Length: 267
Image 1: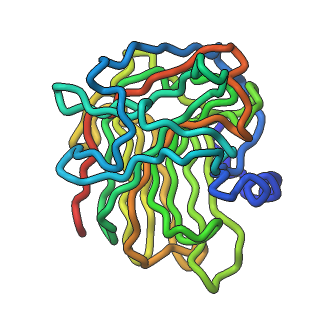
Image 2: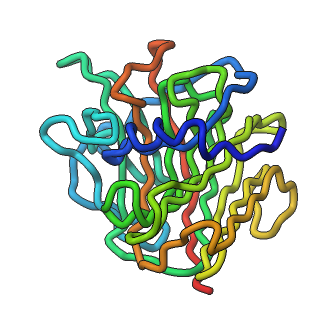
């Protein structure tokens, strides 16, 4: 079941990137998609430029019109930090204009070699086929210097939903390295996802529950250089929840994901 799909869908990767973030993927059995939403407290209805979360300052994406990835509409009202210090990202339909609006934050600080970890609560295994949750670092150059963990079926409910992707550093061959596998959450919606980036390797891990070590490991995948081009840049970290190709959720439902924490540990 665990196979690398790096060639067949390379064209899809290139076509979907204007920050149309995608991964190379192949058909596999799909799970029924479901999504949940919850109301944003009135005090949170804002489009502020930044938020503080997990010890860092983050820019909130809220342009006047559409922007990539997608392209999509983005709203600061779909990003907030609750009283517990947990980050909420939401896709919702704006009743005033019928636009589906997405959520994205990016760190004001850049990060280099080290371990990047997110602890998540939400239906990430059952996202609609048109919805993408991305956890990644990104240099700002499309298709270059980027490392991704993405939960997405890229519009095809038969494709696996957990995607690890590494985009090469500037100057190397443009082909990304990628691995995809079907992911489920039989024990509940708490999961941990991380990657460790060094000068010579990137190690991805996905685990059940909130973990600091490797207990309840679901999947690990290692990419080594020189076979995989690994960026040496310090880059911002981004989290986004968005609609693939700007398509509305096929089930007509919004979705909300709660990220309890982001942690970076330098090598």
